[in-house]
Length: 414
Image (cartoon, rainbow, N blue to C red; front, side, top):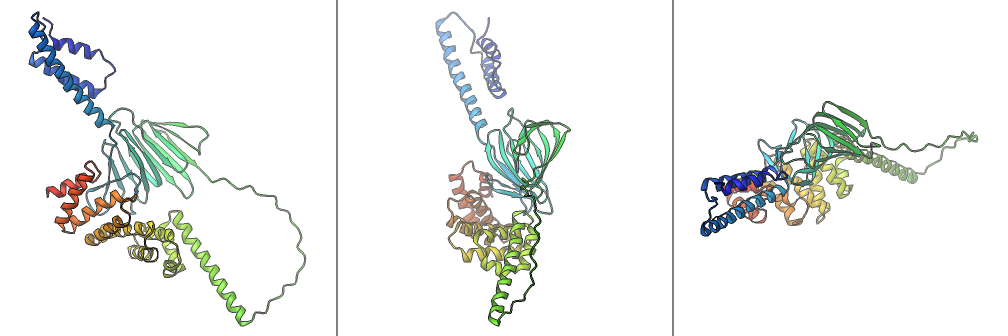
């Protein structure tokens, strides 16, 4: 007697297009049908309809399982970043700046098993997340990349200046230097396709290969120089009155300050943070804190923070808060002050006040998700367990699947 279970097994095995997860769900269902012996085909009408009814319920259950698996597979992946403050990791948000200090590399670990190890002094951002990949911007430095590809071909794309790397392989090392616009790639396993404005045509790089290119800025066209003899002129030293001499001295000092300011601004833009802080100190740190605009102060504060000049960073960010209240730059300055207090000084109560300030000033700002999670953790580390538990409950109500959901559940479980 041929059982219904065997008939179903044969029909489902014939479907070659089903994925592994769907096939696993089907297999478990068929095993259940077979073990329960609901499928013997008999002539009696009552047994036949009873079997069909039970089979229908089983198929509905298997379909629900398959649908749940498909929904889960379509959810965006998440990632965590190794904490500079000590052991453990913090949840990351798309768009946040991820930077490795000058002492140890920083690891970025994705929920589906992929990882990026950012070398010392490097910077990157995870721009967007999908169910089977991400878009990553390497702003500076080297990174070792390992892609998991657990659910079939992924959609991973890395960008470094004008260069793009579409990932078809699994392990490689990428290095981008924005100062001389040099790009390097070493393939350890699999393959990638390198393209972008720096290459005339996309290039496939396979296992064991490497490439080195320089994406130099366009060279301006030089006009031919024509030598024209200058007329003979006898120089005459102008006679300056005391008043004019004072005005001339002021102009000279102003020009000197402008040149010095241009130096530190250019160094910040080039990512040479320690040199930028040194140049700003030579130009007069206090004067710059009184004259620079909001964006410049925020950049100078970040330069000091990234070069481990914490007191200078605090000074610049406090000047930003004082001179430009109510601006988005001032709110970002509050977030940076909270990060300095949390990561560099272990002042968790102070960090919580700054993160709270950011949320008060920018409740829907780009750093909102990170600020909410860091505020919760800062209060927990500061010993304010009552408020931290309340924050954790509110976080889970608002972001039940958010990147800090695990931290919130840990706080509630303590």
